[in-house]
Image (tube, rainbow, N blue to C red; front, top):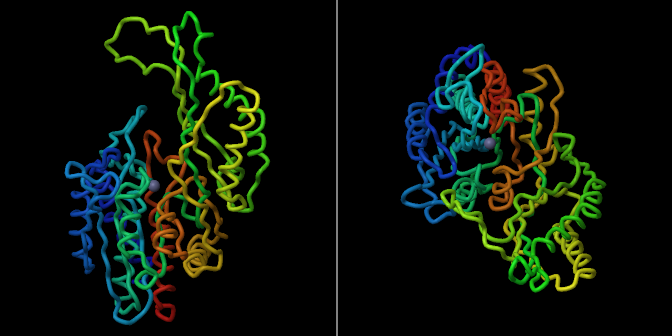
Length: 426
Ligand SMILES: [Zn+2]
């Protein structure tokens, strides 16, 4: 049996594995069921000959005794010296939300699709990489190097209790891992090279409280913030739309710099739901806005921040009493793996062979765990490649196609064959 036949022969196993993973509701936040899914993966991969380690991200952001952040890393050594290919999948899923017609944790199979929260993002990708690795090991037991499979926590909330923690502890050190494939749902014929940068910040405007019947005695922080938004509309948003990148970002709208106003608050807090009275008449003395700015390889983060400061200074120059502050919350630099990196070449060639088409090279509009592998792990040879339709992620009735998973498994299997020196073997 050749490798592709070995993968096709595992079709039922692939479906059952995907269903089993979906049936564990690893919702994040708050981050539940991590230990259960790690133990499940440990049992599965131990049976397949892997050495398996469970790692709790003790003390990481989000880790607590009530919600421990468990991760699993499995490693299978070949019979000869060589390089290590690591498949990294996050085990967490986002909230269910409304509008489902299927059981979000039922793993229902219908018309060749498996349904459920996390089906495409990314339990289907995790199952695909496991099937690819198991079929590869059965077909080429004398491979060189090593294969690793990890299931990690908290990708949906920043990855600090998952890949970031493992990278800090050396698990992605280039001396032990040389190639990383993250099976996020980018589609079976796409190679995702990296992501845009992010800067999150909280902007605050200050005012002075006074009686609402005499607003002239106070100073309204919400009006000041309104002036900031107006200035952003006039000068910043048009400027961002002009900045185009050479990075192959998808979708098309994300090929420019973008900014989202993530939240906007001002004045008294929203009253409790059981409060039936009127609000007290007060001039708001504080307003805050959280911005989510996504930037390009062509932009320096200092310039990204400088632009926002310029907006605020322009407002300050024409508004009396305008007082503001900016607090950085989070930042990640853009990351892009070179097109001729070994893992890119191996997966691209496999897409040509298996699917008979040219791969699309893409860059993600948002970040994912590659940021930690690059920044903390110092490992550049990393891509996202996996089955599934990205648009379905986080949506109701999320699904993954069984044939897409099998095709991706064949691409992954062939990439293993090349990277782990079985090129001569058929
Ligand atoms: Zn994901």
